Length: 381
Image (cartoon, one colour):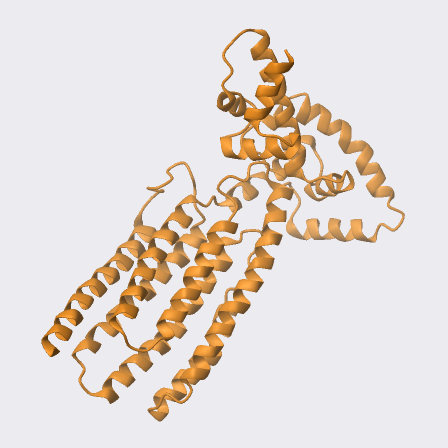
């Protein structure tokens, strides 16, 4: 029996070492690889890339710390080893996971030091456990981490919804920008990881923790590689005014009691959009954002955003309406010329890089799928 347990421990430690190596490889890849291997045409956020690499480095060090524990025979030594390891995880791994969640949201720079403030209570409790050579505060620490995970999920759900609104207000093509589904996956993995690591004993549980770590590595590498860096286009397409000027303009808009500015803006921007966006087919350019459009028509981005709001729409809806109308025109021209109709090609010529994005936008505007709409058009001919 003892020999079987020992062999099981050895096999687990081999698997454990492999997972540690995977974390190290992932860290080095994100730090030293130039360009994306998974998505070469996408420029990922440097900030997210570096913080994710730091997370993988922390995971590697955590694995190295726990590795010698298999050779410890004294229960007191094991308790000290696990307690110090947990303290190190509270100080590095957990806050870095929160930082990654914050870094995925690119609408504004959130203070990352809040992540360490959030985990300060369990750090203090674990330090007291080590000082007193006991586990008295461990249940309280685990309960706090569980509540923290739940609170963080609630907070991120709200922030991701705001982030989605921000994307639709500033970008026409949301491909490689939205993070809702990936956040849900990450939140579930992190919550499961916290639950599993709070369990005591059991070789099966240990394997589950390591498999969970592998899933986390694969997911984070995919997310970092496939998420577009929105700060690049923002910096290139910003109007001339400074951030302070933008804030001043925003204040002026808010303080305009008789709304004469908004009325003037509405009358001036509409013909500018028609001339410089609609008649020039500017909307056909891939991944054009509201800052670029504002610069092309010669108005402030905040004014343009307010104009769209006054019309009961956002930037995303405006551009997609123009593109869908262009697609419909191309379709009728193609049919009239007796040429074969390829929806993907027509969508690309209408400004869409992704057919999935076009398909969703088309259904929102027409209330039916592209295939159903085309079939109906054939029946009406």
